View (cartoon, rainbow, N blue to C red):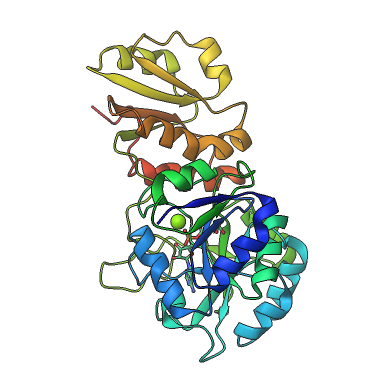
Length: 340
Ligand code: TXA
Ligand code: MG
């Protein structure tokens, strides 16, 4: 199968492919998603195959109207309505109880809930409207790898496995949506994203962050908890905020091969890195760093001689909570300085 790159002008063709049960990757403001008709069980099953994703890890359902949520949710509680009004379209995914016998098990992984997202990307909202059905949309990467923030990243992972990719340039945010479980009495953030805990609490009051670890034989309640995530082939080290970058540079010099360095321009301007350091700038702050994190990890993954990558950490709040959550997973929790 040849994977087509659709431009925004080809939207109709992309919508036809979705209607025909084919897979089309789509842009969102967070990362690219792997789209299929959420009401077509065969198409949804193909999504798991193309990604190599375990079938008990449920998919997000992308909608372009409140009516689409009403069609598949058992009910929309007042808190959910308030959050939708405030943050949709945008990077907040909301989990609600499913209306029985609507979406297939392939979508929900057998749970009695479903995750809804109204992405802030006009082309994708148009695609959903033209297809006339909601789209499942896991991040359009091979399972375990960093999520794709460009059409090129998607092409790299899924060329030949999907019908097409709707290209709308690089995504703005760069890390996936906040996942909020509103299916139980106490709302819980299952995955931090650009819509922060504080922002949600301003609308609905106090919520929890999930720290529950999922066992291998359990259905994951929290996204991605039991699977390897965002992992390039090289070992990733987190450089904690406040670390002395001169010491990092000295450590790099003593390493046998090339070491990838992902840090802000300010760090590169003030640190004398040795010749075996390969630079990738994360820009100016945590916003640009979140935008570029997966791009940098993927860029270094293309260079087999890089066996180690050090990545700048940020304070664990606001967007930093989302950034550090992804960085922690890609590093398997390893911090520089504890390394040897
Ligand atoms: O920003 C995003 O959310 C992107 C774009 C494409 O929309 N999508 C995305 O999908 O990140 P995915 O499948 O890579 O991550 C969604 C996470 C999964 O880890 C899954 O476990 C969780 O959401 N999830 C989905 N439905 C759920 C449910 N009913 N209950 C609990 N977790 C759920
Ligand atoms: Mg993903």
